[in-house]
Image (cartoon, rainbow, N blue to C red; front, side, top):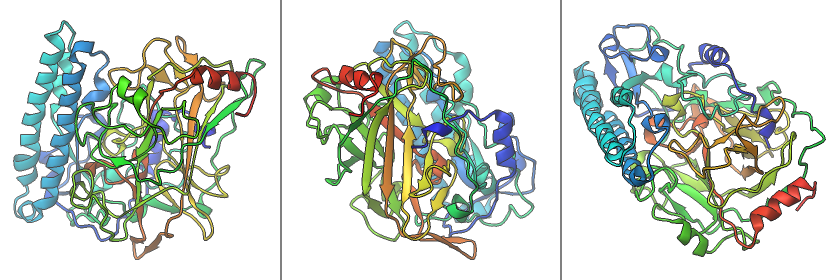
Length: 509
C-alpha cells in the first residue's frame, strides 16, 4: 500500500534531491516565454536563483495563502473560502495569459512582469485584504504578514523540474502535513541555455515531460520497513467496496477547500461512495445521498483527481473549465481496481472516526509549494513492495499495471473535524514508532489503492510518447507529486464504531 514509506524527509535531503534532479525536458511543448531573470527574482530565499541575462518562464509561482491560515472564525469561513478560490482562479487565468502571449513575450522581455505578474499581484493584494476584512469584522485575528503573499514569481523550466528527476524521489516523504515550506524547489538555477524557448510537453502544452517518467525496472528498491508492532497494536482491517466510478460521476468542485464555488478544484475528480458530492453539499445532504458502496451505511465521500492518457481524445469536458480549457486533456481512465481499506496503528488501539471528519492527503500545488506536503505514491503491479515513487510516473513493463496508492493521516486532534488550512486537525504518526504526536489520538488509517491499465509510455529523442498524467491546476504542469486525495467521513448505523472495533480486535472485516 505504500503506507510504510512515509518517513519524513529532512530539508537537506529534499535539497539534495533537487540538486541531483535530471533536467531533461521534452515532449513537444507548446508553451514558452522569455523574460529577464534579474528583473524578476523571488524574495523567497528558497527560490532566489542565480541572475541570468534571460530565463525561460514555464509557469507562475504564487504563495499558497490557504496553507498559512491557522484560524478562521466560523462566521467568516464561507467568505474566506470564496476568496481563496478567487486566488486560485486568478492564478489559472494568469497562467492562461502566459500561455497565449508567446509572441508578445518574445518581443518584450518585460512583458511577463508588466502584463501578467504585476497585475496579478494587485488582484491578489485586494483579495487578501478582503480575507482580512472577512475575518476581522466577525472578531477574528488576521496575521498582517499574509499581505506579503500577494507577490508571485515565475519559474523556469529548470525550476519546475527540481526534485522531479531522480529515480527515488519522494519515497520517504510522509506528507509533512504541518510544514508549508518550499522544500524541493530550491536548488536548481537557470542553465546557460535558459534563453531557449521552453519545451514543457503535454498535449495541452503544460506537461508532463520526459523527465516526469521513469522505467520502474531501473529504480533501486526504496520501500522502508514498517514500524514494529507493540502489544497495544490494532492489527485488524476493514475493507469497504465502493466500485471504480464506472458510472463516471465526475465534477471539478472541491467542497472541502472551496465550498459553494463551482469549479473550485480546476480539475476533474472521480467520486465513489457518496454520490451527491459537489460544491454545495452540506452535512445534511451527504447524509441523505445514495452511496456506491456495498455497505449502504458507508456514505463517505472518497474522491481523487482523474488520470488521463494524453492520446488526443476529446473527452466530454474538452471545452469546459476544469477540463480542456484549463489544460486537463485526453481520455479519462477508469481504474480497473479501487481498494478502500481502513487499517490500524502499530502502537495503539484506534478511536472511531468522528462524523464528517475531512482529510486531504497530498498537495495539489507541489510544483510551486515544494514537496513538504507531497504524499503521492506511484508504482506498478509486481513492484509495490519494492519501489514507490512520489515525483515521477512509472513506466511499467509489459503485463504490469500502474498503481496509485494513498495512505491518509492517521492521527486526529480529538476535537476538530476540519481546520482552516485543512491540515492541522490531523497528522501522520511517527514513521519509526507509529506513535501519534502529542495531543493527537490514533484513528483508523484510510488507505486507497487504484490500479490503471495505461498504454506504455516511452521516451524517444527526449520526448515522452503515450504520456499519462493526473489532472491538476494548469500552472502545476501535471507533475506526479501534485497527486492528492480527499475524504469526508459520513456513516450511519454506528458504522464508524464497527470499523474501529474490527481493527482493534484484529479482525479482517
